[in-house]
Image 1 (cartoon, one colour):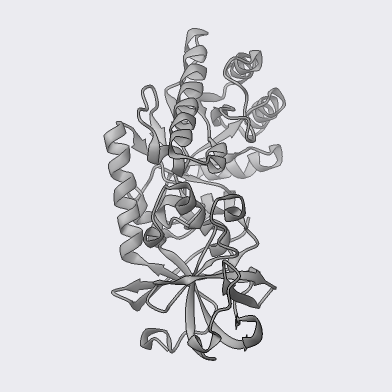
Image 2 (image 1 turned 90 degrees about the vertical axis):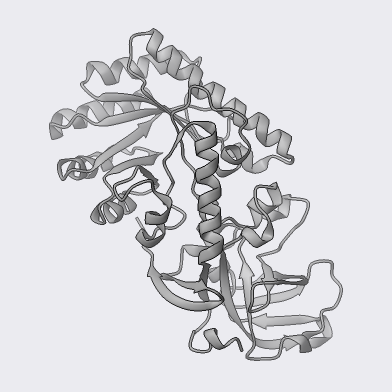
Length: 377
């Protein structure tokens, strides 16, 4: 067993600090080259130790995906936050409480119903909520189209109700389904043009729209220009994962996160190696299944982090993982005796990290720290 791992109970979550920092530096350079500021999305890391390395300053800006994340990061001094999920009316009292405590928390919405609910809550809470209107730039999920009459109707309800309309935001989630770099570049331009068009339409109608916020790790990586955009929001870039590698966003050796697992048995006649990490540790995310290279539940590496001959976690139960060759050939199970450890790279870093309480930080191949992370809602 690798000496640095002898005291670790598995499964546990390993974070390669050097790879992480390289990813952060690369995206920061991209933002600078494109002339926009970064608002890193902290839903991937959920850790102040990682967040401080991602942000431009200790107070932000940053993005979150839950109000519990907002509470956690605000409690660590991050005051400039964007909550990037359409606001549910019942959460507005919580948002108001955070704002009264000094958190500059902005929310998003994309409907007249949500705008009216926010205005009503603002009156009841005596709070001028800060709002971005979510724009649909790719038909992937939420948002209002830039040409939709509802865009101006929502803006009018917000302005007349006393809310602070700050602009627009969009997320090109469909970029995860692209199958070439050229397709991602085209999606990045579509994301940009839709957000900018919506902001211009708001301004032409007399509404404020100083913020034009876009972002996904693929589109930020391959965007050729971001004219009219003020900020990008990216999250998974900090760790990267196998889906990002499959998109050409990163190389395998840019994936900073892995799950350490111990070999607990074999089915030698099948070429299987059994480990003590299943879908609870790796998640059920099979995002690479639709890509040219299917990585199963994760790509298997040796203790030093080097991939092992196309070995993947082919099957997974709750706490059992079955390692086998991706191409169906028989793996020599004797190469991984009982008690040896492997590192499994994740399909989706956000989902794989979710059940773990901390990162075991690797520096120079040795575990040097434990960085806590938060979870839940």
